[in-house]
Figure (cartoon, rainbow, N blue to C red):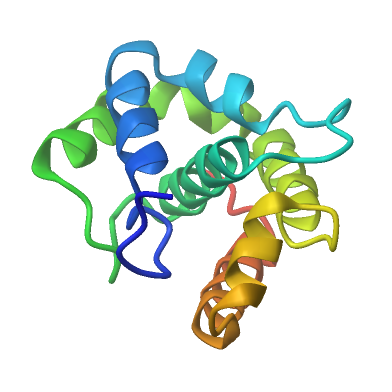
Length: 139
């Protein structure tokens, strides 16, 4: 797995997803977060979903806070913000469900992290989950 850190965008699959989001916006978010039928989640799909969930968390704040994203991705977030805002609550629910699947025992990504030291990754997922669990702000 092309992973160099525990952050949401510190892997090759998330970087690929970022390029898709830049051009497809909301459609890319829905595509990455649609894991309802996923039984045994493979690592690339989980990493894409986590990156999408991170963008959903960022969309509500309207900034990139402490997450390191490229200037191009930040610009794409601003460009797609008006499409995301009306469905933000739904996207947050999908994001939390995706995190549940990514962190489940049958998730390939979780199994890969368990082979190493999963503590840092689990902490990053807990932080993302906490940010997604905040009540949706009205704009």
